Length: 200
Image 1 (cartoon, rainbow, N blue to C red):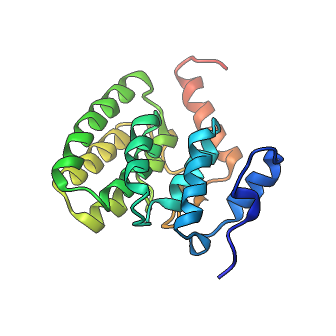
Image 2 (image 1 turned 60 degrees about the vertical axis):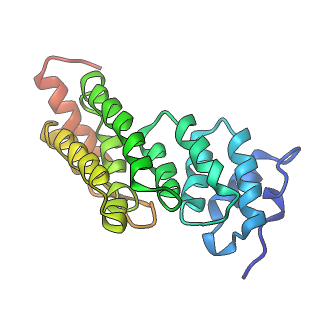
């Protein structure tokens, strides 16, 4: 097993590019309990969404006791629903169904509001539908509250116009897989808005 990167042990005074390179190259197999602690410290000090998201993805399958409070804090802290689901994946390993049900009631209310405030939010839906997100949780735990949440995500996704569907997906490892060339996807979305009389 490779050693946990030195640059991530204390990021104070380190170049952000070196920290980012080490973080995004890090594999879960190289993280022990002490390394998880370093990542939690980086998460709590970071204002960068992609850094926090990467840390959640690296840690959500670990059972280290030190992470019990971390996932609860991350769930409360994050505004984006996909990041909440990554925190929920960590919480699900250490929570009963009733605890998740209470959290997901609020999550589903927020999801309903998102459909009204940002009806074409296809990126967030694709992330929630990713193989490492809600489908994973439903398959692993089978809780009704998780199934209900995934069904709501799918209903809201299906309610969107076709121009916003099928641009990308997310695999089991959380890697975005492009399904359309970016130019083709942008052209579809532009055509949709042109047909509605909306200009950039």
